[in-house]
Length: 122
Image (tube, rainbow, N blue to C red):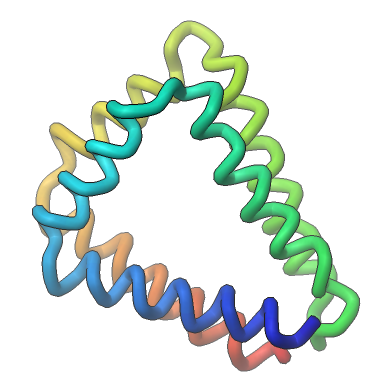
């Protein structure tokens, strides 16, 4: 189970480092994925992410944090699946089209810190 936590931590660090170094390419790649598939299908990604946090939660030093993150991921999956008043699509449009490169890099820095924190809680 600790291997899942290592996967989550290093995965965050790698993906967010790529987001910082190649901001426009990464955002265009993610935007292409969201434009290719229906939003209802893409809602499976945060649901799977929540499962990846829920399964190894009891093997970490702070299991409640992992359970809260899993719960938030499940809530995001529900919002993405239902998409009330086109809310999720508007959030994606903001991130892909109107957020500046500095904002996207800030999310990358937060993700690197988050991945490092995940690795310290094993």
